[in-house]
Image (cartoon, rainbow, N blue to C red; front, side):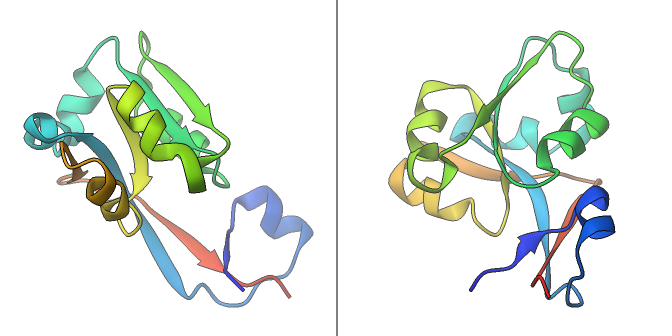
Length: 129
């Protein structure tokens, strides 16, 4: 059994265990863009980005809040567990938990995980009761 994300709305309706892990927001990008996407300020200033966001609880909301991307677009990937590597190949960049992103880079060797600095965005996972 795997834990699930705990957005505020879900926490109001369900009881959860204490979070057992915090996942960290990162980007999976072409390897030559890894340094650029490691800077939170660069991502905030970038225009016309197309970002794939896995359909994980609260993740799209976190990305929109932290990176308004006024002229950029977010594309939700509902089949992220099986097809995100294809979505990554078809787009420029993807938001992904840093703890899960390395598998994409194993399947698509031209891509790398870019962890944001100095910003760290964490989202907790817990078991429902």
